[in-house]
Image 1 (cartoon, rainbow, N blue to C red):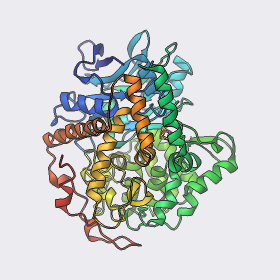
Image 2 (image 1 turned 90 degrees about the horizontal axis):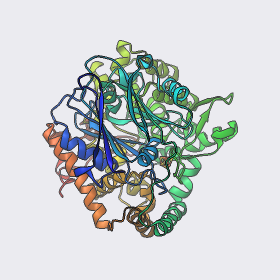
Image 3 (image 1 turned 90 degrees about the vertical axis):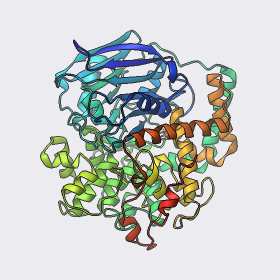
Image 4 (image 1 turned 135 degrees about the vertical axis):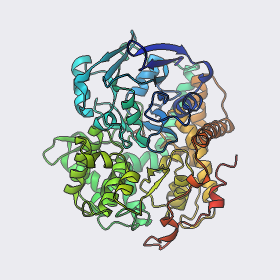
Length: 580
Ligand code: SF4
């Protein structure tokens, strides 16, 4: 991976590309690459949908190799949702393929002069950029079908649905999975709207004939990778819980802990939880049989395999196995306890190209505003359909929870930096509250997953209901996460590397034997800090101050049942998260 593909979508005479050496970006991957490019090249005060914003796609450092778990991909830009820097990452096949094609990043720049829509095709022979208005206002599934018909069943696609074309702040970017379905999404922060603003509907990636990237030391790499995989398999979360039930294994766990936001963050437990839990989902999938009864990876090389496939009662494909965040967002948070309805909502989100967390939070805010009753699954489906249809109401909803709450006069809007909170109530899981408040990304569970020590007993224990230790916990996890996101490894490896020193060492050995570097644990920490500092500086230059590192005030005033606690980490403590 020794080159960057830059495409100027606003070039005179039509989009034009150039391939450049890595230069100052050499050695970077994933989030480290996207954040470095955005921080260096995007004016922080630019309009996110304007010509000066850049849309960056970067596979991880080891993507395209035989390293386990190495196929995540990062998308970066200035976010139209938060107004700050954004990195959203996804699974799917494109990371591995771009890695083999040798691209460390794709950067979309400028803006087309009119509303022509383009498709970009990247193959070993080069790059073509073609106007294709036949793709206008198609959903991601239809786009991928057209690309399959045109380019065959081996290519991977990176695409946007209707929401991205409409430049809605809840819009995601879809990446095709191993079955060539657009089920993997860089969901957060409206990254799909920025791709839409660049006039790009789909990027087709074809690595036909290319081999796996070669390690610097093949024998030692193979041995280190083996140890790494063994470590993942022996940890109870990565070796048993996630493979058996997928991420939705957390539904019962977080409900039991009293931290499952229900009815727009009104309560911490959902009475219908058992009906939509990971156990219930697995039972349903096993009953329906077929491909859905086995979990699988979201990309080749995943050995944890937390994903799966969801079929309806007649055995027809609906969507991927809905993830915990989706089941919570469209389920518990909206009072909906129907897995088939939740799967339908997931399918619509994927097809329209919407972030399921933002949309679930938005529908719950709309329910609080009286647009629908909590628990009314059909009403939730109607609301999301409005987004795909581009009605006036749909465009409001597709702009996210903050806009929707503002338009309909709702006080309780669970957002930070205008990005909706994920599936952990910050009063019952206070470490998550610290991460939500201070993350450079807006409310984001993956930015520093304090659920580990707060609830799961991974990497130590910190009382989830008390402020003590939460800032240090969140800080350390935010640093580690920024580093893991930069490797392109799935973040779920964190469970094993936090708990098992030999697995962390195996990960370092995998990286070092592949790249020829000699990274230590301290170097990894330094990388995480460097990425966070770049992102914080960008946000500061974009106008963010300490007041943006806060939760909405109702989390400090309204106790949540069953623990009847408020978020009680002080502002002074929050301001100590980035003290490095
Ligand atoms: S563990 Fe899950 S999210 Fe991570 S790479 Fe595997 S399937 Fe994807």
